[in-house]
Image (cartoon, rainbow, N blue to C red):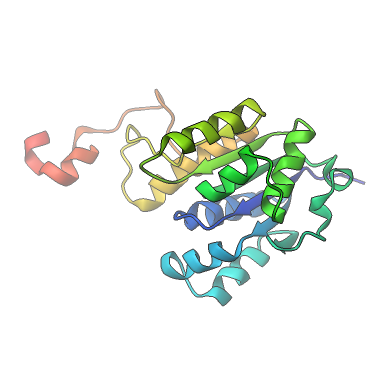
Length: 213
């Protein structure tokens, strides 16, 4: 029997819900990963503002994962290291500053932080996709503490050298970077040195027109 790699994807209540949905969508199309999702109550609220209705949001997630848990479900098996010992990684995308603070200070008040801390206990990869600006000194300290504990801090900070044509390209750049950290092959974005964009396709042309040509 083939044992598929197991991943946990957490979606917290920060702006950038589309990043989490896109990651789930990509993983579901690979067909060789089992994905478990933890969804916070605030994530649903943000999704209604940014993406779609609550019902559609939950439907999209359920169709792209093995199991879906809500963040107040501390009875979930993901609360136990004895259940996730054979999991490969966890990503929280987007990761709110509240969730970051709970992880950095070992506050296990919900399933999202509890599961993340379990991954750190087991020295397994944990990726925190922070999507917030500006960042306070306290937030920076929390990122530092999480990083010292083994987490990878991956701000949702898209690059522009691929000359994105639309928001999908911007989202795919960030999701592609997450997949890179997880060691999952992808071609979601054009990497540095992979071909060149013709001058008439430069991003600045969209803003300044003929002045750039």
